[in-house]
Length: 494
Image 1 (cartoon, rainbow, N blue to C red):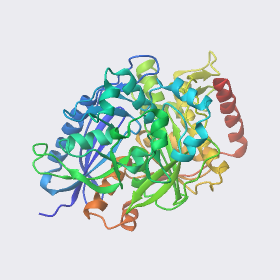
Image 2: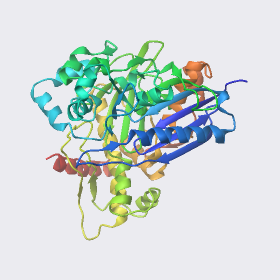
Image 3: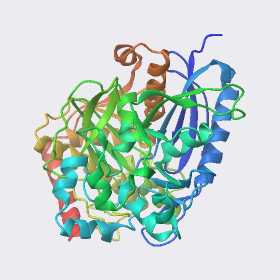
Image 4: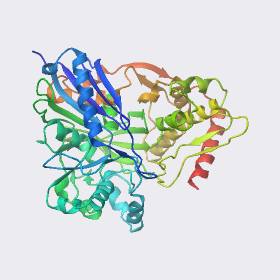
């Protein structure tokens, strides 16, 4: 029986989804569920790994069942995941020794500040392409070792394993047989040397992390292992892994140097393909592997915005301004402007290009004439302004302005936001016919490894555009909006 389908597992920050794609990269069936967020202290964010494993298994089984093709016709599984979220588990039992510490978590801010003050950041950037920020996995891992009783001694004895979510899922899916990851997830740990392509012994010493904890690193399209007996009706190879943002770049078919995508989910992440050159940013962007195929690495510049859709979720769940995220499109259009209201959504600090973990969210320009619609519009506009800041930083680093911006993620369904992005960036914004590009990218990697697709040329032909948003705003109208944003940003950073 021909194996013509791919199962993509997309394990995100607030939900888990599994999607079955056919050989034309069309979604056949899917399952999705949200899971609990835990906030044990201000600035701390955790997930229960058992919740994640339960949901991965349930949604994967649901997607396979609803697809009607059966596990025996699934050529491979592709995994994509929330990056930087950090787990340590017992090698003997597979049980985590602590909740997963989520990428948004800021508990290691003081550690990062101390390392900066000691003059380590330039060397860290040269080795890893990253900055010293609690966003990344390395300091989270050290925190777990130092705060769970006996953990450091057990790590030194080789009893524990570290991984990001992909690595944990790979371990569980293979019944504990495979402790591995891919280059994109490894590169987000502060422990991976992006130029030498290996775990960096000096970084491990700096962060006090035993190298025995670390997984084996492979290309993105690779047969990592096979699912254990009893999980599905047939054993399926796990054939692709990529961190969510690199998976989205791949799913958007941004294979040529200079192509860019921006994903709008909980946060916003913009990646610009820089080819085989790892460009060192002078404007506090990240240098990161975009993907590695057949041992050859393609790099990207990345700008990471911590809060995008999370601000809309706050409007809904925090202060009750909206009942559904989709309402923001109509609310933004029912008022002629934001009434001078600006939101700087630094709920968990500010990411690129500012990297201020201590900044906190603020709303400026409120008057008695401000309404719920103005707040909703200000939240959407903040996403556009932050994206503009990333593009300007990339241009300042010597990159050409992208000819177009490909967008994806849940917020990209908002027509008003896409139009505002085009106006601010002064380039056409392209929205694909399938916004699930993160899962699609994971599927592409697994399909390459299993022969469902022949190469990048075929994948490029599978990408199609649903709508293009052209810039319409005049320079005269744009300038005061940008000036107002920069003033609000200055006040927040101050």
